[in-house]
Image (cartoon, rainbow, N blue to C red; front, top):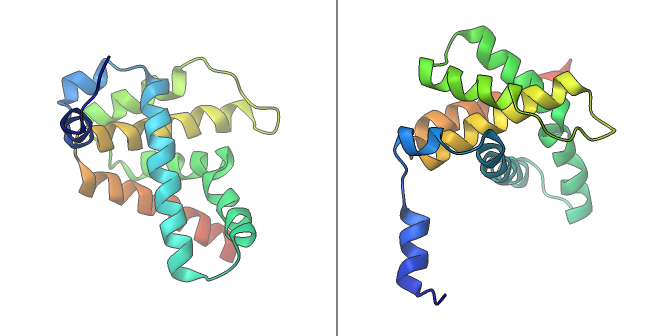
Length: 148
């Protein structure tokens, strides 16, 4: 199959409808959400601290590990800020079956998957402002936990 630059640009610019995004597997949504959130964390860390790549990577772990993302998801749910559609994405992400790494608690991993699925869903549907609100909650949750 031959792919042209036009095909690649079209794929990068595509915004899915909520209906199209809802039929994707929660793990696919989480896969996208993980990369979007990780990118945001890296941008944040570069703006607040200059350091070696090793130091930046070590600092990013607290933000992207399951426990941190689970805390962010709890914060979002407790705020009552989710729409009905977003609640459905979160529920599907939390209830999906996947391999839980040895270093993560099952409950944390499930909520982290829900958080990533939410971020992925909002990214794919072009709801950038809404997605950024939740990304900020994720980052603020960790910053506040580090201060405590």
